[in-house]
Amino acid sequence: MSEENEAVVDIASCASCGVSEEVDDVKLKECDDCDLVRYCSDDCEQNHISQHAGACKKRAVELRDELLFKQPESSHLGDCPICCLPVHLDLNKATMMVCCSKLVCDGCDHANQKREAVGKLERKCPFCRKPIPSTMDEVDKQMMKRIEANDPVAMRHKGLEHAQRGVYQSAFEHLTKAAELGDITAHHSLSCMYHNGQGVEKDRGKEIYHMEEAAIGGHPKARHNLGCIEEDGNEERAVKHWIIAAAQGNNDSIKALMNAFRRGFVSKDDLAAALRAHQAAVEETKSPQREAADRKMRSP
Image 1 (cartoon, rainbow, N blue to C red):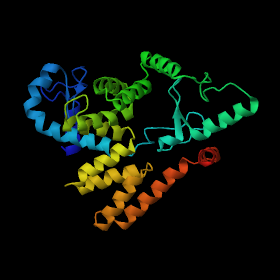
Image 2: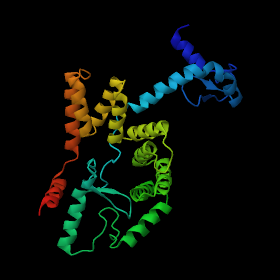
Image 3: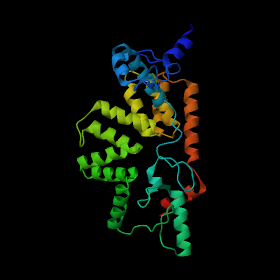
Image 4: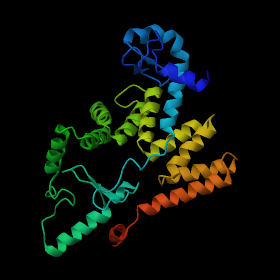
């Protein structure tokens, strides 16, 4: 029997007792950590642990790497909800609306303000059209309303606000909840807190875990930092991280790849491809409206 056929038989039968999903009319479930074997019950899984542990651990690492080194479809910032172009990595070029937690690019925000000025209209959110709060009390009320609705973006902003004030325990709690709800930036911030021991004991394992989760979610700075960590002893993995981050428009990763090229760890073709991908990512964030907003910001 070929290895391929053996694999089919194994996955179609309980790895512990051997009952077949097709013959014995039972529903098998995959191992919690890998895709190599399946079991008919929790008891069978427990009985088979000692035999499966080595292969399971190896396969789990392989699956994690497959996920980790997959090129994200976009950065963690996603697209502007109005013009649908990728949000620039420079957050000075976008605004988070506290009323709806949407990150709106400066091009759309500027165009909306210009329209309101010409029509002498009330200042409103360019996305949800709710009035823009005029005082910090109104801002806080709107943000708390979003937090009570389990909005991860609002939770993350509140967490970062507390961290800036040195209220680390509250910051950690808000960021943890935001990360649990899927906020990628919260994962990156938690990684920094575990690294610095702010609001929590230093923990290298959890620092790396949250950094990887952020990178998987499209956070280019987290991805770049992973490359810097891997650089000491595993240059090949470092280069993979930097190539992915460069393709998202991360400037630091381009510099890291150039340094790696000088040391002979990156080929000329790979560096050229990374430069092209980086430039393409940057070009995707440009539009006439965004350029007009940029000129407006630079004007005296």
